[in-house]
Length: 453
Image (cartoon, rainbow, N blue to C red; front, side, top):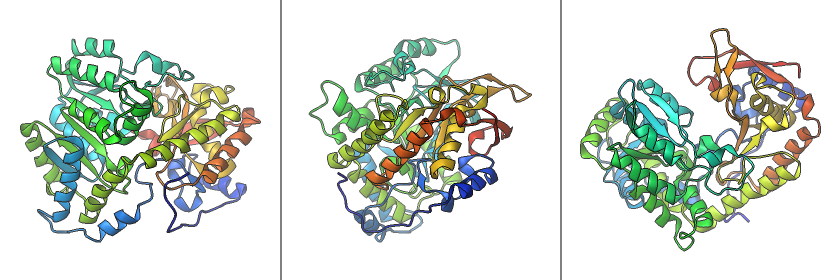
């Protein structure tokens, strides 16, 4: 059961199928363009969508809004320092701000950023810094159906080869858990080996630690030698391997806004701090209100509680079992923050050029008011100048991101029922055709239209 009880509730909009069909058409068949009052179950993102605890709301009342040197900053700093061990800690309004600042300081035009998998904004910030993002997921990640426990690992052989050149690597970024790789965790053994290889080449080793607590929990459950550790101990061991970390705290601090950039190198921290002040805010607030800093400090304590993490993992496992019972494949084994539907397999009548992942995401909304995100050829595919898909994504996936402490078991069972209904006649789901899209991060603002299946 959930290790909490509900004190405040919010009504959920329930539209008719005709109303949802009209809403999706008006949104250009892009779930990002839908309004909140049109959504019944929102699984678009687990970022900033969690429910605050009573302790966090109480802490918000202590927020010190002093421009410089606020008491709230020092509570935030001490909480992050205790967790990570880093000396230089800069608050930012969210993780992508930390990425932008750090990559601007580290990456020169033409250099590489190497990762187990860059997520969308991470990849975009590498690109905007003039670099190239290179993903090196472990070979086991290619088998979506296997229960290999750590498919979020980086390919160590490929990492060593990339660091040997010929193109210079500016930074190695390890994303824990591997969001773009199906929400799979990274093992401590892989982190240790990757850190050693990277350090031997004098390249900064950075953690994208948005889901550090969930990765720690899965390490405890799955990796030999770690079962007797606490989530805090595992997380600290991971941070100890890195030269720095970026984190969106809208995930594993369970707040609506906030992040950090944490570093060991004082010179790099000084360069980053100058950009922070110019673009985000003074070093002791970084674009955040004092109340946000207070809530983050409490959230970082709550997120590592075993009862909370056990229940969160149980939610994902329960939903996964119901989806698979309906005959729909997911990326296995289930992670914690999201489940990834294998849309390419379910909608096998659609080609990658008809964007089966995006088509399934649209159908989930029309069928049940469920909003989610595609991670397939719309997100990762490459088109030529005529708009023809020339390089599809390796997999056509749909991510069901589960907000923290927000939905009950019956909500998730409703999601499974809608998926099961679609699975009874998947051939009726139409494909999608790209109508318009911006050149960067197109999945956020593109428009598509149905094409006959």
